[in-house]
Image (cartoon, rainbow, N blue to C red; front, side):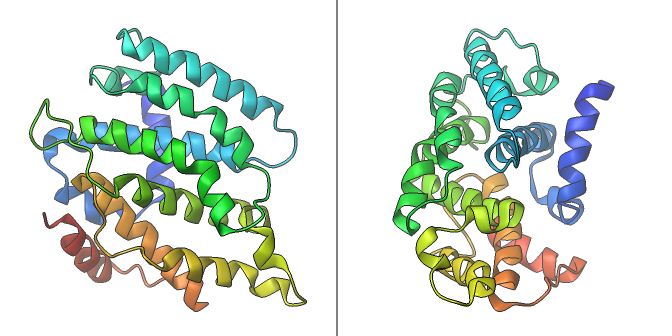
Length: 239
């Protein structure tokens, strides 16, 4: 692997140290592709949750739109593309959804608006994952509810990264604004099952993200010991 690729993969692994316990549950042939894909999604999360001047992030998103369209013709320039682009995934659909990230930076009026803003992006991500990680090569079956699983995780990551900016305005009403992050975490947790639809890598990452959100919802530090992580991942990885 190139040092440029390693830097992207290592950045994601640093944010998700639990993956060292979880990775053995991913088929060996999918492990590099899995981390490369999650590293790409982390780039999009960073552009969604940027603070300050948004123009650099907007420029990167525009570049990524062009890059993803080139992947459809198997012409990649980015190190992550060397790993991901060989898959005949719906890259153009994902490229078309990237402008949603710009719109979703605005504080949503309520929970429904927050979900609508990123629903198209989440469905595009799920469609790519159905091809990247499908156990039966070539089928690319998009399981019902897979997009919503991505949506909940994206909103949870936005809360984690952006803080108040990632909380719907309706939850910021009242005097106790400090409790708003916990209230939003609790709301996101409703309907987020321990095992979500989608391919195994998504189910595993989802359970790690859910554990972080559950701790925030309870107002407690996460207990991400190797044993607890192992049990969570084992349950999520089951078919």
